[in-house]
Image (tube, rainbow, N blue to C red):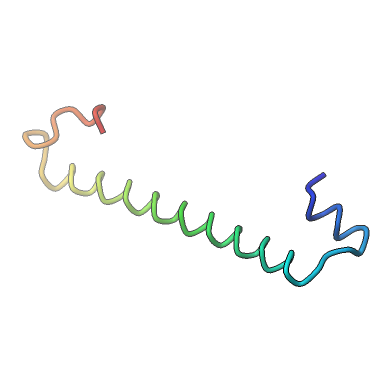
Length: 60
């Protein structure tokens, strides 16, 4: 059981704790989204430039 869910079950969650959990959730979501976008851009550039420019994508 996560600490936040345990505290919630016990009715001991403060506003500061809720803000921290939400902030961490959004931070993680934004980082994942940025990584997904960068991966899609690399794949798009490789497709546009063709195999001459990106002959070995395993080094990425």
